[in-house]
Amino acid sequence: MKLMTNYYIMYTIVDFFMIIFTVVILYRLGRYMGSEYEIKVIRGMFYCYLAAVAFDIIWVLAYSGIISDNAYLSASANMGYWISMSIGCYCWMLFVMSRLHPSFVYGRKLKIVITAPIILCCILDILSLKTGFIFSAGPGSNSGGSLFWLQDVIQYSYLLVPAVNALFCAVIARTRSQRVEYLTYSFSMLVPIAAAFVDAYLPMVTPIGIMSIFVVILILFLMIQNSQINNDALTQLNNRRRMDQYLEEKIGDATEKQPVTMFIMDVNRFKSINDTYGHVEGDEALKIVAVSLKKAAEKYNAFAARYGGDEFCLIVSGTKYMPREIEEGVDKILQDAQKNRTDKGYTLTVSIGHAVCTDPLTDVGALIRLADEMLYRRKSEWYAKDIVQPK
Image 1 (cartoon, rainbow, N blue to C red):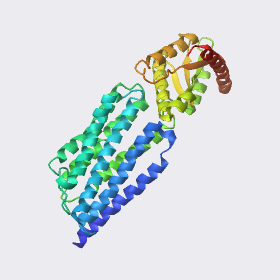
Image 2 (cartoon, rainbow, N blue to C red; image 1 turned 30 degrees about the vertical axis):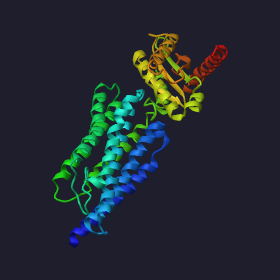
Image 3 (cartoon, rainbow, N blue to C red; image 1 turned 45 degrees about the vertical axis):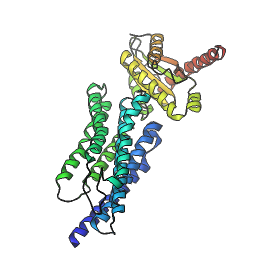
Image 4 (cartoon, helix red, strand yellow; image 1 turned 90 degrees about the vertical axis):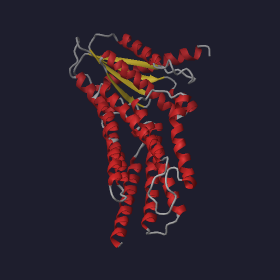
């Protein structure tokens, strides 16, 4: 009896350390690690995990008899645990899908289809306090109810659908960093699935499920942190640091026959989008610009990066395309990306400036200043036209 009591105390200690480690990771999550929406969703997932672990501690203490058990305490702990786990799975799906498809717009019907199962899970968990649909309400009980399988199907659907989608996106990904990220989303799901199978065949209750989910959280956090070295978290474009390195390398090879053209672009009236529609919508607008720049980079064999704020850059080597042709191409790609966004109340446009380098001794800062000066002139011209146009 004493041996079993010690075992459950160790179980509780493991859960307690999972809480400490998760709180540390949660504290380290910063705004720079993704869009406002992505950070909101991933924080929601972490909070759900913390709640699930807390309820698991209550349940195991009651199950083991370390604290006085009764039907209401066990049932309430079970209810809290499964609701937290279900919502956590839902948040995971929202986060992964937002990373895989940053410019995708969810319609009302699709939102209902995605959200309805999680609502059903929560309702069934609450009803189980009286009916035992999902879990037995008896003291010290560890058995599932008649509809426990339905909750399992819903939760694993929220895990497996984005995992399969991530695997498909990894196959068609054009960059190594994207492929690594997508494969991480896909294969990290093997950890909790394997843990569920192992736990099902173990003779006693274990914290292996809680530990497996923490492994996913840790992998996710380390992957996102590592990606910040050269990638912008919000747009998944190259960041300013990588842009400076790339530009310096290209300028060193610049000649009259192989010039390097630096394009800097700025989203017109971006501040008004943030002020009118909120920062979440502002983040979505920047993602659309980023997706458009990725397509432009593929078309013109160029390097795309987020320069900072609502400014982006494109670096093109060679004379296959004239600067004006590239600018018009970027505008067209951006407009095409907004064809299904007619209900937003605004249209994204960018002002673009460029500078051409043919001397390998050119200073990086000087080239950027030349492009920025043209951008300033173009921006002024755009605002002048926008003021006189009829509303």
